[in-house]
Image (cartoon, rainbow, N blue to C red; front, side):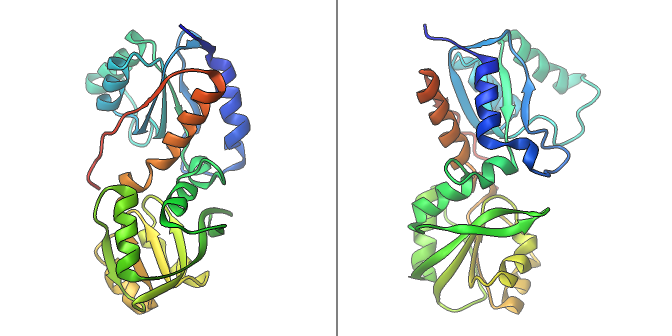
Length: 253
Protein backbone atom coordinates (compact mmCIF):
# COMPACT_ATOMS: atom_id res chain seq x y z
CA UNK A 1 0.00 0.00 0.00
CA UNK A 2 1.36 3.38 -1.04
CA UNK A 3 1.92 5.91 1.71
CA UNK A 4 2.99 9.54 1.96
CA UNK A 5 4.13 11.61 4.89
CA UNK A 6 1.41 13.79 6.36
CA UNK A 7 3.96 16.58 6.80
CA UNK A 8 4.77 16.52 3.07
CA UNK A 9 1.09 16.74 2.10
CA UNK A 10 0.46 19.57 4.54
CA UNK A 11 3.51 21.48 3.30
CA UNK A 12 2.33 21.08 -0.30
CA UNK A 13 -1.18 22.28 0.60
CA UNK A 14 0.22 25.30 2.42
CA UNK A 15 2.48 26.21 -0.50
CA UNK A 16 -0.41 25.84 -2.93
CA UNK A 17 -3.17 27.58 -0.97
CA UNK A 18 -1.06 30.12 0.97
CA UNK A 19 -3.41 30.26 3.98
CA UNK A 20 -1.25 32.79 5.82
CA UNK A 21 -1.95 35.35 3.10
CA UNK A 22 -5.70 35.38 3.87
CA UNK A 23 -7.55 37.18 6.62
CA UNK A 24 -10.32 34.67 7.26
CA UNK A 25 -13.09 34.28 9.82
CA UNK A 26 -11.71 33.35 13.25
CA UNK A 27 -13.32 29.90 13.23
CA UNK A 28 -11.81 28.95 9.89
CA UNK A 29 -8.43 27.86 11.35
CA UNK A 30 -7.00 27.18 7.89
CA UNK A 31 -4.42 24.41 7.68
CA UNK A 32 -3.86 21.21 9.63
CA UNK A 33 -6.46 21.03 12.40
CA UNK A 34 -5.84 17.48 13.63
CA UNK A 35 -2.72 15.35 13.25
CA UNK A 36 -2.56 11.60 12.76
CA UNK A 37 0.38 9.26 13.37
CA UNK A 38 2.34 10.83 10.54
CA UNK A 39 1.47 9.03 7.28
CA UNK A 40 -1.38 8.96 4.78
CA UNK A 41 -2.53 6.02 2.68
CA UNK A 42 -6.00 7.20 1.59
CA UNK A 43 -7.53 10.68 1.26
CA UNK A 44 -11.17 11.61 1.81
CA UNK A 45 -12.73 14.98 1.00
CA UNK A 46 -15.91 16.57 2.32
CA UNK A 47 -17.40 20.04 2.45
CA UNK A 48 -17.87 19.91 6.23
CA UNK A 49 -16.01 18.25 9.10
CA UNK A 50 -18.87 16.70 11.08
CA UNK A 51 -19.39 13.44 12.98
CA UNK A 52 -21.17 12.05 9.91
CA UNK A 53 -18.38 12.86 7.44
CA UNK A 54 -15.65 11.72 9.83
CA UNK A 55 -17.51 8.42 10.32
CA UNK A 56 -17.80 7.98 6.54
CA UNK A 57 -14.09 8.78 6.15
CA UNK A 58 -13.30 6.10 8.73
CA UNK A 59 -15.55 3.63 6.90
CA UNK A 60 -13.61 4.37 3.71
CA UNK A 61 -10.30 3.67 5.47
CA UNK A 62 -9.09 7.26 4.99
CA UNK A 63 -6.44 8.70 7.27
CA UNK A 64 -6.64 12.27 5.93
CA UNK A 65 -9.84 14.28 5.59
CA UNK A 66 -9.75 17.43 3.44
CA UNK A 67 -12.58 19.87 4.25
CA UNK A 68 -13.77 23.37 3.42
CA UNK A 69 -15.51 23.99 6.75
CA UNK A 70 -13.41 22.69 9.62
CA UNK A 71 -13.99 21.68 13.20
CA UNK A 72 -13.97 25.05 14.95
CA UNK A 73 -16.78 27.23 13.55
CA UNK A 74 -18.91 26.97 16.66
CA UNK A 75 -18.11 26.60 20.33
CA UNK A 76 -15.44 23.93 20.57
CA UNK A 77 -15.01 23.42 24.30
CA UNK A 78 -15.33 21.60 26.57
CA UNK A 79 -14.55 18.32 24.78
CA UNK A 80 -17.44 16.46 26.33
CA UNK A 81 -20.55 14.72 25.02
CA UNK A 82 -20.72 14.76 21.23
CA UNK A 83 -17.52 16.79 20.96
CA UNK A 84 -15.66 14.07 22.86
CA UNK A 85 -17.19 11.40 20.61
CA UNK A 86 -15.99 13.31 17.54
CA UNK A 87 -12.46 13.62 18.94
CA UNK A 88 -12.44 9.94 19.90
CA UNK A 89 -13.61 9.01 16.38
CA UNK A 90 -10.74 10.95 14.84
CA UNK A 91 -8.10 9.56 17.17
CA UNK A 92 -9.32 5.97 17.15
CA UNK A 93 -9.29 5.94 13.35
CA UNK A 94 -6.02 7.86 12.97
CA UNK A 95 -7.67 10.56 10.81
CA UNK A 96 -5.93 13.88 10.22
CA UNK A 97 -8.03 16.90 9.21
CA UNK A 98 -6.85 19.66 6.88
CA UNK A 99 -9.23 22.58 6.35
CA UNK A 100 -9.18 25.40 3.83
CA UNK A 101 -11.89 28.06 3.72
CA UNK A 102 -11.27 31.36 1.89
CA UNK A 103 -7.96 30.16 0.40
CA UNK A 104 -9.85 27.34 -1.32
CA UNK A 105 -12.69 29.61 -2.40
CA UNK A 106 -10.25 31.95 -4.08
CA UNK A 107 -7.63 29.62 -5.56
CA UNK A 108 -7.36 30.31 -9.33
CA UNK A 109 -6.91 26.64 -10.31
CA UNK A 110 -8.46 24.51 -7.57
CA UNK A 111 -10.99 26.88 -6.04
CA UNK A 112 -14.74 26.64 -5.61
CA UNK A 113 -15.36 29.71 -7.73
CA UNK A 114 -13.06 28.51 -10.51
CA UNK A 115 -14.80 25.14 -10.57
CA UNK A 116 -18.28 26.64 -10.72
CA UNK A 117 -17.31 29.16 -13.40
CA UNK A 118 -15.90 26.32 -15.48
CA UNK A 119 -19.14 24.36 -15.19
CA UNK A 120 -21.19 27.43 -16.15
CA UNK A 121 -19.09 28.14 -19.23
CA UNK A 122 -17.64 31.43 -17.95
CA UNK A 123 -14.24 31.62 -19.61
CA UNK A 124 -11.19 33.51 -18.36
CA UNK A 125 -12.91 34.94 -15.26
CA UNK A 126 -11.25 37.78 -13.35
CA UNK A 127 -10.90 38.40 -9.59
CA UNK A 128 -14.04 39.86 -8.06
CA UNK A 129 -15.75 40.70 -4.78
CA UNK A 130 -13.38 42.28 -2.31
CA UNK A 131 -13.84 40.82 1.17
CA UNK A 132 -11.46 41.64 4.02
CA UNK A 133 -9.06 43.30 1.60
CA UNK A 134 -8.89 40.44 -0.91
CA UNK A 135 -10.82 39.23 -3.94
CA UNK A 136 -12.56 35.97 -3.03
CA UNK A 137 -14.82 35.56 -6.09
CA UNK A 138 -14.66 35.63 -9.87
CA UNK A 139 -16.50 37.52 -12.60
CA UNK A 140 -16.81 37.11 -16.32
CA UNK A 141 -19.00 37.70 -19.33
CA UNK A 142 -21.61 35.26 -20.61
CA UNK A 143 -24.54 36.25 -22.82
CA UNK A 144 -27.39 34.01 -21.64
CA UNK A 145 -30.97 34.27 -20.46
CA UNK A 146 -31.60 34.24 -16.75
CA UNK A 147 -33.61 31.04 -17.16
CA UNK A 148 -30.83 29.45 -19.20
CA UNK A 149 -28.26 30.36 -16.56
CA UNK A 150 -30.46 28.86 -13.85
CA UNK A 151 -30.57 25.59 -15.82
CA UNK A 152 -26.78 25.55 -16.14
CA UNK A 153 -26.41 26.19 -12.44
CA UNK A 154 -28.79 23.36 -11.62
CA UNK A 155 -26.81 21.00 -13.82
CA UNK A 156 -23.52 22.10 -12.25
CA UNK A 157 -24.64 21.67 -8.65
CA UNK A 158 -27.28 18.95 -8.92
CA UNK A 159 -30.00 21.02 -7.29
CA UNK A 160 -32.47 23.67 -8.41
CA UNK A 161 -31.38 27.23 -7.58
CA UNK A 162 -33.52 29.93 -6.04
CA UNK A 163 -33.76 32.81 -8.50
CA UNK A 164 -34.25 36.44 -7.45
CA UNK A 165 -35.19 38.15 -10.74
CA UNK A 166 -34.18 41.68 -9.80
CA UNK A 167 -32.52 42.52 -13.12
CA UNK A 168 -32.98 42.08 -16.85
CA UNK A 169 -34.08 38.74 -18.31
CA UNK A 170 -30.76 38.46 -20.14
CA UNK A 171 -27.53 38.16 -18.19
CA UNK A 172 -24.19 39.41 -19.49
CA UNK A 173 -21.87 40.35 -16.61
CA UNK A 174 -21.86 37.57 -14.04
CA UNK A 175 -20.18 37.42 -10.64
CA UNK A 176 -19.66 34.22 -8.68
CA UNK A 177 -18.97 33.87 -4.95
CA UNK A 178 -19.68 30.39 -3.65
CA UNK A 179 -21.09 29.90 -0.17
CA UNK A 180 -23.17 32.38 1.80
CA UNK A 181 -22.63 35.83 0.30
CA UNK A 182 -26.24 36.82 -0.33
CA UNK A 183 -26.27 39.50 2.35
CA UNK A 184 -23.34 41.19 0.62
CA UNK A 185 -24.90 41.41 -2.84
CA UNK A 186 -24.47 45.20 -2.88
CA UNK A 187 -20.72 44.58 -3.10
CA UNK A 188 -21.37 42.58 -6.26
CA UNK A 189 -23.62 45.27 -7.72
CA UNK A 190 -21.10 48.01 -6.90
CA UNK A 191 -18.45 46.05 -8.84
CA UNK A 192 -20.59 46.23 -11.98
CA UNK A 193 -22.16 42.81 -12.50
CA UNK A 194 -25.78 42.41 -13.55
CA UNK A 195 -26.08 38.88 -12.18
CA UNK A 196 -24.73 37.45 -8.94
CA UNK A 197 -24.39 33.73 -8.20
CA UNK A 198 -23.81 32.59 -4.64
CA UNK A 199 -25.00 29.86 -2.30
CA UNK A 200 -27.61 31.38 -0.03
CA UNK A 201 -29.08 34.52 1.45
CA UNK A 202 -31.74 35.75 3.84
CA UNK A 203 -35.39 36.52 3.03
CA UNK A 204 -34.84 40.26 2.93
CA UNK A 205 -32.29 39.93 0.12
CA UNK A 206 -35.15 39.46 -2.36
CA UNK A 207 -36.16 43.10 -1.91
CA UNK A 208 -32.52 44.17 -1.98
CA UNK A 209 -32.00 42.44 -5.33
CA UNK A 210 -34.97 44.36 -6.73
CA UNK A 211 -33.65 47.65 -5.32
CA UNK A 212 -30.24 47.01 -6.88
CA UNK A 213 -31.65 45.84 -10.24
CA UNK A 214 -29.60 42.69 -9.82
CA UNK A 215 -30.33 39.11 -10.78
CA UNK A 216 -29.33 36.78 -7.96
CA UNK A 217 -29.14 33.00 -8.13
CA UNK A 218 -28.80 31.01 -4.92
CA UNK A 219 -27.34 27.64 -5.82
CA UNK A 220 -27.08 26.29 -2.28
CA UNK A 221 -24.25 26.87 0.19
CA UNK A 222 -23.25 23.23 0.25
CA UNK A 223 -23.81 22.58 -3.45
CA UNK A 224 -21.68 25.51 -4.62
CA UNK A 225 -18.77 24.49 -2.38
CA UNK A 226 -18.15 20.90 -3.42
CA UNK A 227 -15.81 21.89 -6.25
CA UNK A 228 -12.78 22.97 -4.22
CA UNK A 229 -12.37 19.95 -1.95
CA UNK A 230 -12.86 17.64 -4.94
CA UNK A 231 -10.19 19.45 -6.95
CA UNK A 232 -7.74 19.70 -4.06
CA UNK A 233 -8.06 16.05 -3.07
CA UNK A 234 -7.79 14.90 -6.69
CA UNK A 235 -4.61 16.94 -7.14
CA UNK A 236 -3.13 15.49 -3.94
CA UNK A 237 -4.04 11.97 -5.04
CA UNK A 238 -2.20 12.47 -8.32
CA UNK A 239 0.86 14.09 -6.79
CA UNK A 240 1.30 11.62 -3.93
CA UNK A 241 -0.07 8.57 -5.81
CA UNK A 242 -2.78 7.88 -3.27
CA UNK A 243 -6.44 6.88 -3.64
CA UNK A 244 -9.07 9.45 -2.76
CA UNK A 245 -12.82 9.56 -2.29
CA UNK A 246 -15.38 12.38 -2.07
CA UNK A 247 -17.84 12.06 0.81
CA UNK A 248 -21.14 13.58 -0.23
CA UNK A 249 -23.15 14.68 2.79
CA UNK A 250 -25.48 17.44 1.55
CA UNK A 251 -27.12 19.78 4.01
CA UNK A 252 -29.90 20.93 1.69
CA UNK A 253 -28.92 24.52 2.50
